[in-house]
Image (cartoon, rainbow, N blue to C red; front, top):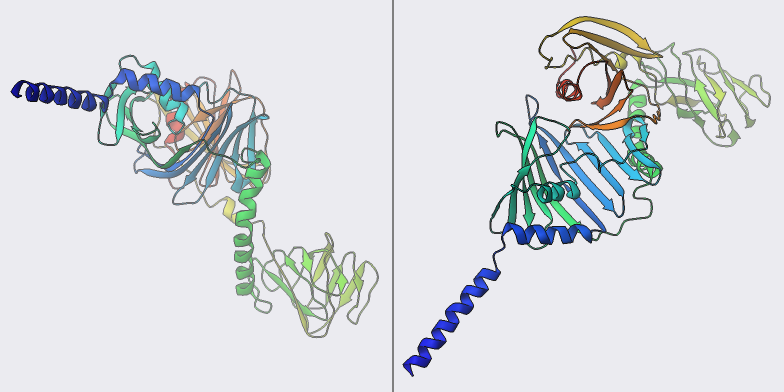
Length: 456
C-alpha cells in the first residue's frame, strides 16, 4: 500500500513538472511560432502612441497602422498637440505621402517598406527578432520580451526591446535605444488585432485626402462665419466685406475694413447669382454675374444688377449657380477664406539646433517662391547645404522620382541624385534641405533638429 502511494505521488510530481514546463517557452519555440504567424499574416490594424526623445522635449504622436496582404499599407501619424496628420499609403498605384491639411501629396514607385524598417509596423518588429541570432529573450506575466538589434535609417538607433502578447504575439510595447542605451523612441499599442476586414477604399489615395477635408470643412466654415460676424456689416474689419442695399448676396469671401474688398461665392433666394463677390464700403452697389430674377431699383440686365440703398456699395462676380433676392433694406455680406499674406511670414526663421562638425552658418536670405514668402539659410564648411523654409498656400504636388526618409516625427521625401533635396512639413511649414555632399544620416539629424523650434 505504501509502495502504491509512493508511485502515485511520483507520477503526480512528474505530471506537475510536465504541465509547468508546458507553460514556459524558450526563445527558439517563440521564434518558430512567430515565423508561422508571419507566413499566415493576411491583415491587421493597430492604434497607439509614439513618443520621440530625439529633441529637447519629448514629442508625442498618435499612430494608426493598417495592413492588408499582400502589400497594402496605411500609416497615420498625428501630432497629438497640434492635430496635424500625415498619412503614408501603399496600394497598386504606388507609395504616397499625404499631408491632407495642405492638400499636398507625393507619389513614388517604391518597394517601401520592404527596404526600410518602421518601428510601428508588425513586419519590421518581427523581422528584427527573426534576423538577430544573438537576440536576448525574457518574459513577464503577459508578454514575451525580445532585445534585438535595431535596423532603421537613423543610424543612431542601435537596439530595441519588443513586448509581444503571450496569447497571440500582438505587439504591446516597443523601446528603441541609442548606442548609450538611452531610450529615444517609445511606441505603446492600445489596441492591435489580426484578421481585420477593411472597407474597400481604406487604402485609396483620394479617399484619404478628401476624407480629411470632409471631416474638418464644417469647422473651418464655422470659424470663417464667426470671423465675419465679428467684422460686421457696418463696422467691417479686415477679413470681411458687407454691403447693405436692395438685394441679398451671401457667400464665402474676404475683405478689408469699411472701404475694403471681399470675394466669395454668393448665395440667396429667388434669383440666380453664382457669385464670387467683391464689396467696397458705404456707397451704391453692383452685382455682376449670371443673374436672373427680381432686381432692386436701379439698372439691370441678364448679366448685371445694380442697387443702391442706405449708402452701401457691393460688387459680386459670377462664379457658379447660386440665388440672390433683391428687397428693400436687405443686407448683403460676403465671408470666406482670404489670402492672408501676413500669416505666411509669421513663422519667422527656424534654425536647427544641430550643425555637423566643421560646418558654420553662412547667411540668411529672404525670398519668394512663387507667391509664398520664404527664407533660405546657407551652411558651409566640411559639408555644404541650404535649408529653405516657407508656409505654402494650399496646393497639390506630385513628385515621381524619389524615396521616403523616416524622420521619426514625420516622413520626408528625398529627390535628386548628385544633388539631393529632402522635403518635409512640420507645423504647417515646408522645409527643403538641399545638398551635394551632406550624408543621409546627417540630413536626418539636421531635419530632426527643427522639431519643436519656434521661429525667431
